[in-house]
Length: 193
Image (cartoon, rainbow, N blue to C red; front, side):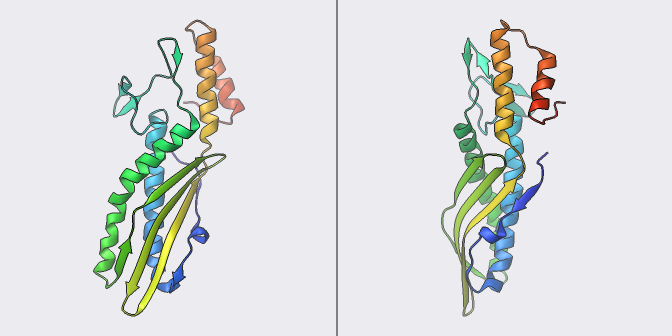
């Protein structure tokens, strides 16, 4: 489950009539939050992948990649993992954002352009959505462009423990030190179930 979250409403720059923009802004931020959390949960369950590599192991509904196979380490790199979540969001956000159509029934005219998503895995996971929107209602107008959301999930810590696991496996000729897993998790302030 995702840790504490923070919407960066202050990051969203409103041009024009702020009161007109607020309900649309809140809707987009809600979509961003929901889709980012679902996406992070999915890629986390699948070893950092939205679309795991061929040959991954099917485990219930998830595809689990091999991090070590045929004497090769195959741990996903941070930049690739960020791109995987970006791909998830680029594919899934439009489904949620299609709900903006309800604003047309309330007399709003919305003109949107293509969306672009950026993910940064650092001490927290930050998602930035660039989605230019023009909002019109009668003689009033406003525009929005950038939305951001942050989750208190430090993906590089998980990647470090994954690397330690693979290194231990390689160094021990295919054996895995189970007590080491708890030690590494403790060092990274993580819980292993």
